[in-house]
Length: 456
Image (cartoon, rainbow, N blue to C red):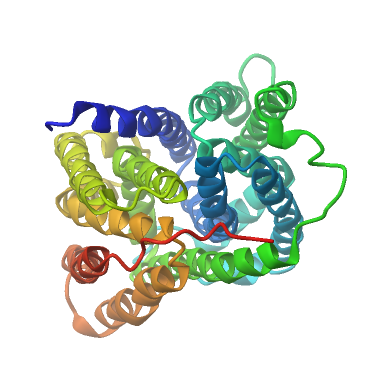
């Protein structure tokens, strides 16, 4: 902690993202609790849909983040033309991904949801869970458009170091979401009682508010964001840059999609052990998401800082910077993990579900807390490699690991081992130790240190 200015720079970028993500996840937790008050079937149905939507969300994140690597380096070079090109690419990609997501969830919702419906000793009703899930999803589809536009503006603003405004937009949205949840789920203040459809409607309304905030704020500051000037006059992007961006972005988008698909497959493996596990996993994952914001935001900050340094040509000290940022991320994560461990026995008691499900959720939270520093280190290594455009390596490092190691292990353990679920969960969460060893070796070798912003 000798170089305070260095860590202050990291926190200046990371803290607004921590606040933004933290409040978003906290409201998500409250949303989950409100739905959980309806009953186990409603909570499980919403959890299944959100797990499936997460695959699409991370496909967007991967695609836009791949372009964002170039944005950060263009910003480091003060190349306004390059920033304008990357913004256009983000908008074009978003249209394609929007149509893809709507098509998949409109036509294949029931078969996808049904993959998670297993009876478990009388706990939960698969038919009712499916009904709640479809009702929730039908409304959530209306929020796909504002969500993806918000992600475009958020990505380019964060890549240029502006993290406060996306935080403000998110804060505004979560207030709308929280109020909407209260009045629409339970039918307060004269509104109809809509249950899970009300939860989805509140989320959609919040997404439109967040999109409006970001678009209006950014568009009215073209004198500051000069790359916006003329950005919508054409779709032109140099072919050489398009090829370069495609070569880096496609593996990253594929990685995020496959990783999210791996998480969905992992949840499906857990679901094989019954709807009680689905419900407990939903509680555990929603709560842990609140406490994971520190190392997740630090990972994004690592990518931004190292990307800007590479764009400026500062390669002599960048290895040391990467090391410091990694361990700083682990340090912050350890603090939040201890907090989650202390809260693990309290939060599950709020849910209107069986004592067995609450007890299982508490155990899962404690296991997650103990393994969080492992994820923090692996996450930092991932963003370090990605900052230099090594997206194919991160593809192997991240999603391939999920499908080759984590998912097969969960599949085998849930079906053939006979172990109790907490033991299976602990083994699966400990597997990223392998990623830490591989990531550490690749970061030390410095293969990620390169400038990728050349175009003609």
